Image 1 (cartoon, helix red, strand yellow):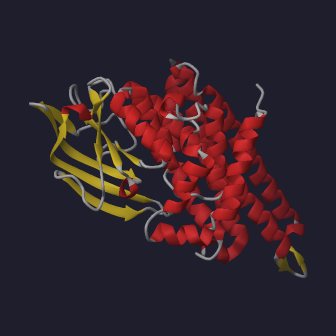
Image 2 (cartoon, rainbow, N blue to C red):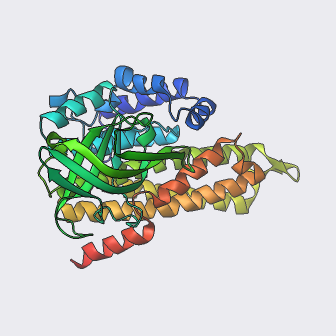
Amino acid sequence: MDFTRTDEQELLRSGLARFLTTRYNLDDSRRAAKSAGWQPAVWRGFADELGILGAILPERVDGMGGGPVELMVIAEELGRALVVEPFVDTVVIGGGLLNRSGGDRADEILRDIVSGAARLAFAALEPTSGHCLHDVSTTARLDGDHWVINGAKTVVTSAPLATQLLITARTAGQRREQAGISLFGTEFDVHHPPSGIEVHSYRTIDDRVASDLVFTDLRLPAAALLGTEGTAWVVIEPTIDDAIAAIAAEAVGCMRTVLGDTIEYAKQRHQFGQPISGFQVLQHRMVDMFMELEQAAAAVHLAIYALDAPDKDRARAVSAAKVTVARAAKFIGQNAVQLHGAMGMTEELAIGHYFKRLTAVEHEFGSSESHLARYAELTRG
């Protein structure tokens, strides 16, 4: 398998890296994360100057028609710079769900994603569902020419920034059944939510924003249904696998920065009259961190190249990558903090912010245990 990037992919990587180096200051981004939750000027730059919001979306909606490798390139660079803007929620999840659902309304929103006008949030997790996205108790029933939705969603990441909300609701079947789940879309503004939505927003441990939502007789027009009623799971599962691969690539970018910063710090910090990088035991520790990083990067490559494979092969590779990356993120993050001493968890030092993001990645879209179970089930089958 050839992992060499094409000239176009390398140009994409280097252009994004230059933009983030010159325009994405960590101090400014953390201040923005704690206030507005994002930097609109950066998002505009992603759309107008770099075009990355359309890089993996189809040409029919003004995208560039890129594939999984372009996704990996972008996600890893965003991870290196610890970008909090909602690329995965909007482009990977929102764009993936809309593209797979099809229809004129979906294409209209996809064009808005490419232009930077639309930001999406996916309301799927429920208070009692854990990480199981097909454990859906929220219901939708047709009342005349409107759908009426009742239920609750939790940890809807990027909802406070969203202009569009995608909601899963059960139109048939029983709880935890994959059949009978439908997907709905509606315009959304956290400051002026539609009648029938109660919003509780907050900041997550890794300086991102999320909301808990309660739907009480939320009425949406019949056209709000995306795709075919009751069949949303067939578009949700591959889209979430895309998102897992994306955050795994993002984590690799985070870990590259963390390891690089840790090595530089070890060269500068002196103890007993010499740099601590000269102590053999710490050299061994940093080699172990490097090995974990390379294993994680290899697993991500395999997952990325499997995204277009048959369902079982794709799911198995993605779960393997998620487990490998979660293990590496924990090992590298904890050791980086330890090697930095008490400074490792201060707000002033970048390492603490990266550590928080790596900790969140360990559990995002399912724990290691859930993905090990999924991998085992797919292997038995």
